[in-house]
Amino acid sequence: MIGTPLIRWNWIGDHLHEIRIALVQHLALTFIAVGVGFVISALLAAIAIRLRFSYQTVNAITGILYAIPSLALFILLTPIFGLTALTAEIALVSYTLQILFRSIVAGIEGVPASVRESAQAMGYTRRQQLWRVEVPIGLPVIVTGLRIATVTTVGLVPIAAILGSDQGGLGRFIFDGLDRGFNTPILVGAVLTVFLAVVLDVLLVRMQRVLTPWLRHSRAS
Image 1: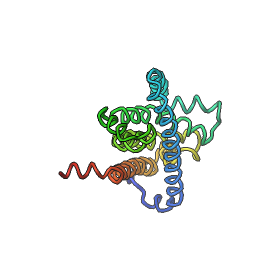
Image 2: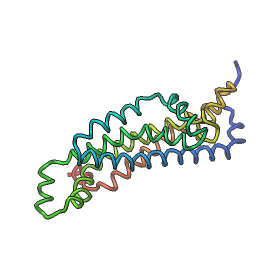
Image 3: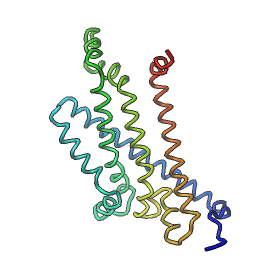
Image 4: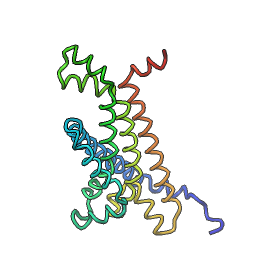
């Protein structure tokens, strides 16, 4: 409608409490999904690295889960788990698995053989070699996968709003605005979702720099 403002700032002021609640819920859904997904992916990666023949099977299964359209997966899970946060989390976790699994395997297997041989020559056990050598060296690749999984999850959380206003974080505003043809909540939900994704990505980049100081020194030299 001509003359209608794109954003009604008074609406935002009146709904700051609801926006804060939705933002916290969005973060919680994201952290739980990525955290659980990382643990599962790490276990799957450990199996795939130890049992090489299992890699293709795990990669195929996680790839199928990743390929299912998000809206369809939420709907398929609803008759089993209901309109609950568990339904949202199962769907969100499933989309992190292939990204994290492949990045962890790539990070560990990307360690040069000469480095492994040097660690063995120094008397490192297999566990010491993994945690003191392979994980630190593979950390940049692993964190890259973590960044992709986190940003992807932040973008998928709003779709969970189809399960109910208590399940979709900032998506509740997007769906509410679409239902009413009201631009302000749509923009609030969309802009804050993008902002959240950018902030979390920047934080993960900084975390990687803190955990891999030798990379900064090598670039500086």
